[in-house]
Length: 143
Ligand code: ZN
Ligand code: MN
Image 1 (cartoon, protein in one colour):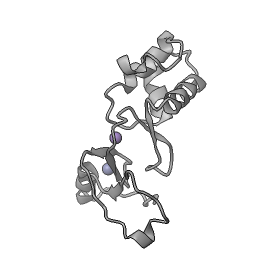
Image 2 (image 1 turned 135 degrees about the horizontal axis):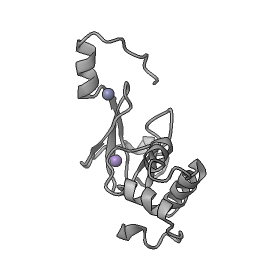
Image 3 (image 1 turned 180 degrees about the vertical axis):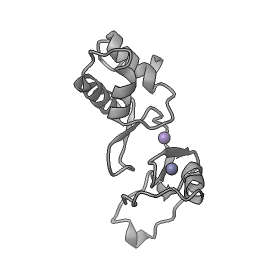
């Protein structure tokens, strides 16, 4: 919770519950996921409170907003540079903590000095792979 001290938000019990849910969360939840979880404890909380809190955290760079899931924005409290894997079936997102040195030929750089990258991998997670082998009907790929 330390890192959220200086975000300039009044830390109401509802916002603290949102921050608590996000802390060390490795699930890359959507705003809806966060709302569903936190409103169990605070049934009167509005979705706007979740949304606005996430927006403030994002602007202060206290959380990352991921675009890897085309269906909805996903949030990551881990702001260290890292990469992601997404399951194209269940949309589970996993982290990859590893540096990828990707040499880009000079003529492909558009004059840019490259300072970093964030790579998205698409695949089928172990659980969905198991489900497939049991013959359960699959949803069509969203990608
Ligand atoms: Zn999956
Ligand atoms: Mn992550």
